[in-house]
Amino acid sequence: MSETAPRNRPENPASEPAAGTPRTLGARGGIAPAATDRPRRGGGDPGSRGRTTIADGVVEKIAGMAARDVVGVHAMGGGLARTFGVVRDRVPGTRSVARGVKAEVGEVQTALDLEIVVDYGVSIADVARAVRENVIAAVERMTGLEVVEVNIAVSDVKLPDEEEESPEPRLQ
Image (cartoon, rainbow, N blue to C red):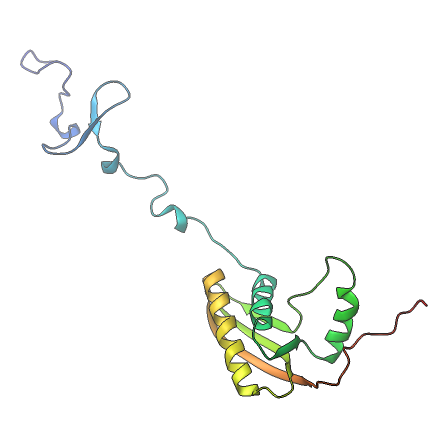
């Protein structure tokens, strides 16, 4: 150390922060640049570190719940799927909210196919429009995926005098 250099000051001026730079007390008691001047580990926003994948089944459940919320939708799925669904729904904890929904999920987009049964007397075009709007809003809000299309197939109309499909019990 030269005799003209002040004590506790680095001899290399390049290692000292420029005048006006915020300073913090370093671990050894010396002056160090503020934390904002140091490079961040990992870089970038913590929310963007890593990758999130969403399974098709997750999107199908969200879409199924959103479609069922629309007035005029009696049930989801075609005849055979509904018949098996009635049996499955009788077992506690096995209710399938994704019945009648098929999703194709990419990294940033998804496409959905829904099969619905509408109540007699409602406008099918209005119900389909409402289902489409509700499903798109719910899926985009919950997943962040862009919904590129929602195809709706109306497979049946529930008439007022029709009984619910329930298979005969096997045991009597």
